Image (tube, rainbow, N blue to C red; front, side, top):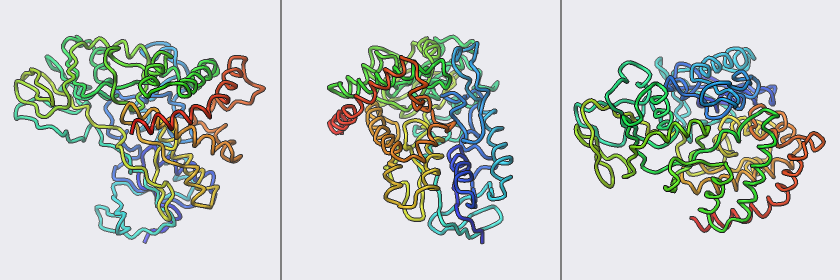
Amino acid sequence: MIESDYLIVGAGACGLAFADTLLSEAPNATITIVDERAAPGGHWVDAYDFVKTHQPASFYGVNSTQLGHDRIDETGLNAGFYDLASGAEIRTYFADVLERVLLASGRVRYIPESHYDFERRVLVTPEGETALRARKVVDTTYTAGPIPATHTPSYAIAPGVRHAPVNVLAGSEGEAAGYVIIGAGKTGADACVYLIQRGVDPDAITWIMPQDVWFYDRALYQPGDEHLDHLFELTAVQMEIAATAQTADEVLMRLEQSGTLMRIDPCVAPGAYRCATITRAEMGVMKRVKNIARLGRVQRIERDCIVLDRGEIPTGPDVLHVDCSAKAVRPRPPLPVFDGERITVQFVRTCQPPFCAAFIAMVEAHFEDEAKKNVLCAPVPSPERAIDWLSMTLQTAINTFAWMQEPVLANWLARSRLNGQRGLMRPSAALTPVQAEARKRMRAVTPAAVANLRKLVAESV
């Protein structure tokens, strides 16, 4: 029998962020972390070699420990913005956090290569089964999506077809006369950018897009003071758009005009939004791919053609078909975050999973009443459809208002490293004239924005 106050299922970014905050905010809590992988880091353990964080490294990881160098890149597609973290850096970081912060506390037990059976409340390991007893079970796996390296495609593949996950591109087996990139999200975008940066002719790439995707401009997510005027101004503009737009489509079009959102083709309305964040330089590289198939999802790949929902495109034996169709976040029906002995980690703010996990741990440590905790941690919808920008922004605004009524949470938010909106919480005396004016506009328009977003989301159901 293994006993602890908290059992965290999953040693990925969310599981470790939850444990890290709980350690600092609940000084007597004991924690057991179980995970099916042999090392901490979740999907980063299996990530493709050229993957990096979407947003600055300083907003990612666990609250107690800096990730990245907190400096501005001078070259490359991220030039002018704060550094990102590579998959290798993140794996090293999480291993260090586990050893130096969590296990060194003496209050955390880590059990890798094990599966927790929620129904039977037992841990299944190669050595057998062990009963686990905890006051609370924290499920960080509820919205976890499939991993590109291990994802099983939903389409059929004929014998002899060259087909591989995106991970293969970094090795010699990824060399081919032509490439078909299957998937329109961030992984597909990464694959196209990587190939072109490596010298592959864009005309040798075919990009299958079941639906186009809205991308966020990374300029919006920067931690340095030199970017704060821009952050304040665009945040105010977003709220003004949300307050005055007549339709959901108008919201998205005006967000594009404001510089918040980007798309591959100005003539194609994206049907998806998944929080993918890129620079305009990356978008410029992506737009060099002209062979884009918008015929729906792949049904099967034959040796000489690819059959899609609404037609076929040619292929050949020397073409490498790269599966980028796995979704990072699996859309699931929202559950109460706090439900008796179960804590189900979900988005409570748009697009920042480790922050959400750390915030949920903060609420768990400082509040007793379950109803109150669920008001503070109302789930934000997972990103999937383009319309989800509206519903995610709506719930985030409602949640943020509730958080700011609680001094212990407001103080934590103002100093949390993971809080990508931390700059917006600066004391009034420290604001520039641009920031002060933008804050005034935000406060004035937010009630109307919430009311209008409620209306537009209801009309779009």
